[in-house]
Amino acid sequence: MIWQIDLMVLTLIVFCAFSAVMVKDLLSAAIIFGAYSFLMCLLWTEMGAVDVAFTEAAVGAGVSTIFMIAAIFRTSRSVKHRSRGRRFYKLIGFFAAAVTGMVLLYGQSDFPGWADPNSPASSHLSPYFITHTISDTAVPNIVTSVLADYRGFDTMFETAVIFTAGIAVIFVLRQYRRDQTDVAGTDEVAYQSPIIQTVSRQMVPFIQLFALYVVAHGHHSPGGGFQGGVILGASFILVGLSYDLRSVLKKMGEGPNIIFGNLGVFLYAGIGAVCILLGANFLDYSVLSRILPATDSVMARSHGILGVEIGVAIAVMAIMIAIYVNISSHGKYDKGL
Image (cartoon, rainbow, N blue to C red; front, side, top):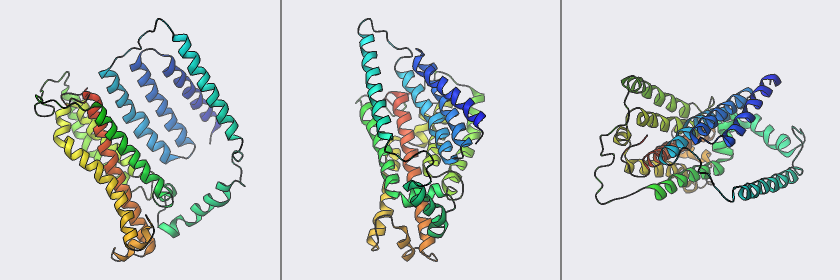
């Protein structure tokens, strides 16, 4: 690590954090938050955590910024001024933050020291993962093997949390009306640019191809199901931003989108259920060698990781599209941003 770069990036991160909180224009706050996420991406990359940087770039600086802009577009761009009680609520927030900070500082005293070589993580887990990942799973990317194999339960429930968040957004925002015509039935578009539309139409196939590469090649390089799924979802969001909501729903309608979200979670859990049916533990991919031709127990774990990563990518893609469509149209499915 180069401490000069770290110090400069950290200074900009702190500046962006305070600016995003203090600025009154919510659109400006969303843009500053996107810059904050991009700086975090640079910091993770400089620290060697490329997988984390990849996720931060795709989710934080990319899709999350679009979600916030869509929410601002459908609500208000400015914070309403409170004539009374504003100082009281500020004091409550400050007190809650101070108490939480003190509790966290007290709790961290029980943790091992920073970079302590004798800590349990450094003396047991990390050495095993580093030395046994290839021999156990035939996966060179340790991050992928940890997330999808050694810590497969956690990742499965992370996928379920994302799916639950998408369903919650649909339940809260989706509006069904008897007089509603076909989804996105209006042809009114606020703004059209042939340059933007042409460029985005040419870029979308390459973005989707790159997303598939990220999913399939996550064993050997930074990437995986979460990153690939977000990039796939972002390609559809780009279509919605460049054209209109009708163009997105023609390619990924509401019904198929919800089916894909269920299918992704079902694929992940289904692979674990197949392992149980074959007489092994849940998500013990090695037993899949009995049904996968020309595969030993080690390669079966590699194929099992790829299978659950595909499930994660499908679920994340569907949920990203569902959240964008509902937030940008306020659940009416008539027109987006």
